Length: 232
Image (tube, rainbow, N blue to C red; front, top):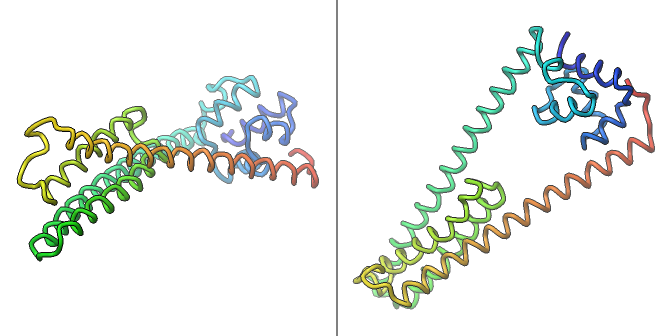
């Protein structure tokens, strides 16, 4: 028996309709129907929730038969694919910031060596990198990269901003760590605040996306109630 048939049989034995199951699982009836007809596979978290809802063990749902083995292989492959994509995305985020950070310093040098007023170099430094920091941090906050460790990012961004200013502007003749000055602390603070703002925005956007998804599920349920179908 395939995984879809097992899910369907477990629901029938629990005397739960598709509408009731879909509502309890927080999905649309069509999604549940597709799982039961094995048009595509449910994720492992949904299988666990169905196990609890139907009062059937995971062993009964997942073990035995070639189809169950295919499902377990699908879960493993999906997990590995997601992990690989996440690692690649993190790497792209870090490399993007470093490239822009280095470019920012080079442009500031060009301003100064080109005999352009140093105020322009300073303005470029204090505009571009904080904006980039906000955008990158927003991306980190939205996807919750590195989990709780992401909160070390503002410190890192703050230090990178201070280094950028010292390396590319009028203060480049000295190091930000020659003395733990108020000037250095101010630069670190600016970079850290830009990062915190970006992560806060990313978190808000993430919550809004989840809210919209929940609203879409609610609308789908309302439509299904207006046009009810017999449970399969």
